Image (tube, rainbow, N blue to C red):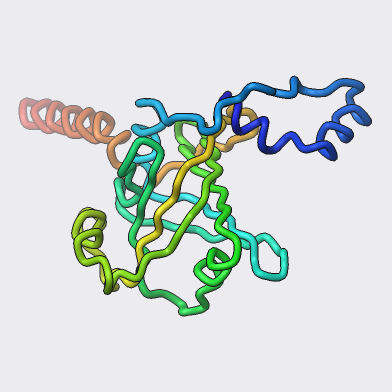
Length: 203
């Protein structure tokens, strides 16, 4: 658990709710660093994801949650506590982009369903026009390309992060993960079929 994360989210109202329901509160995490630095574990986890959820706050104060997906590695760690990803043309609603122009706070939720792990990230984000930053577009273009062109670059300065416990995370697997898992089974079936064929030919 990173201290800055808990220091940020444990507001007076949260502490009062803890007292009301449990008769105690978490520590106050005073003395927390200004920023919780990403370690090698966080970097590896982030860069191995093929999707994540990003929450912003709309201009009229409502939370807005959006799913982002791509090939593994599309969310890049580009600095000590900096993340970037390419934003492609989509439904053109621009809710996240417009919201970030007013309030730069974001929360990211990254899941590893097979391993039952999740990483929560708090940060400040800015949106760069891809037309004005061709060098960055080249740097963060997703591996394998994308059908739509890069229109914007999302840059996130990570304030802190927190790892959640695996309780109640239902394991889910992608087609690629399932295919990898059943390779030994396919090989064994092929081996048994070959043995059966040999046995039948000798009978």
